[in-house]
Length: 95
Image 1 (spheres, rainbow, N blue to C red):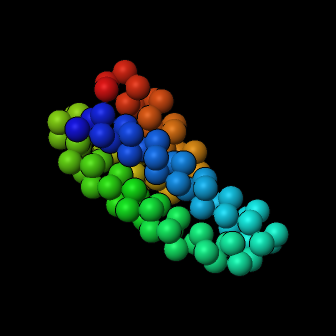
Image 2 (tube, rainbow, N blue to C red):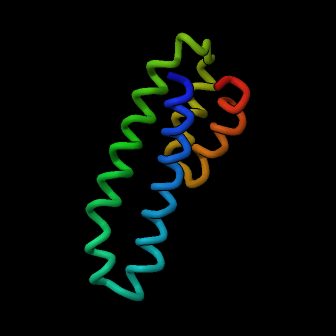
Image 3 (tube, one colour):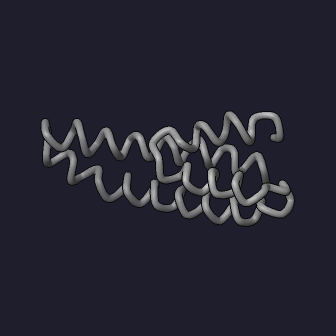
């Protein structure tokens, strides 16, 4: 399950950045394309975000994360590039 969490963390981070790119770059240059992409990108990111959070809770006991580590893992899902940090620092050697 840790490998699934690792892949989910990477995909969630990528989807977050793609969603930002759609909002910051495409919205200004091509509003029609922005609206076309918004729903599938948003839905994909939402599913990956929920999966990331659920998997973090499922792995909490088996990985023996303390409260501080678990808080960092959860907060990282809200920060751009945060899940990449989690993958590198907390998951790289374990999976």
